Amino acid sequence: LHVYLTKWRPAMNKRLTIYMTYNKNGIIDDYIVYMLKQLVNVSSDIIVVSNKKLKQREKEKIAFVSEYIERGNEKFDVGAYSQVIKELYDKRQIYEYDELVLINDSVFGPFFDLNDMFSAMDRRKGLDFWGITKRGRSDFDGGAGVYPEHIQSYFYAFRKSIISQDAFKEYWQQVVDEISDFRSAILNYEFKLTEHFEKLGFKWDTYCDCNDYIGNNINIVEPLRDFNGFSWNIITKDI
Image 1 (tube, rainbow, N blue to C red):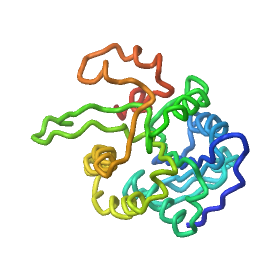
Image 2: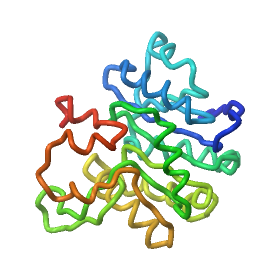
Image 3: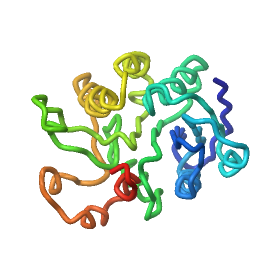
Image 4: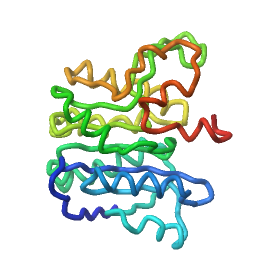
């Protein structure tokens, strides 16, 4: 793994974005290029991790990012994030940033200027990490287990107050051991991350106020008035 980070741009938080993508055909779709170009406006550096080898013409589509990394699809997006974060800690580069953003390719957008969202969240002082939307307590697939309220894992933003702590570093070293298949990634990563750090005393919130929509059958268009993206799974066969 080789990570090269360009100099950050002035006049904004020093923000590192790690964008994870996987396409079984090794393609970078246009919606990903669009998202990355929008992220350039709010990121000091962007690392793209593809869990599938890309052809040269596909790599050229994202030549404007700071770094591109290829790996296998082991442990899904969790494995990709863990691998890069470990390298950043090893080189102590992670401490240079005010915020670390993790985003995967399951979200489609943005439909509005990302600066608006990041600026709004910057004004919410006292947070250690945040996301865009959350899911309420649920039994997931009708099983006996009830899983806690949590930030949905397509987008996380972690501030210096948490990424500077050993607990954050240790989490990414350990969580991959709990991932054996896609279901375990949902149950042991997405469903548990928020509660894990909350129990350690870290504060979190989401950009969208989702409380009116949790647990109800709603018109899917309504939340989008305050929502800066849209899950790619909603408009593909992967729903």
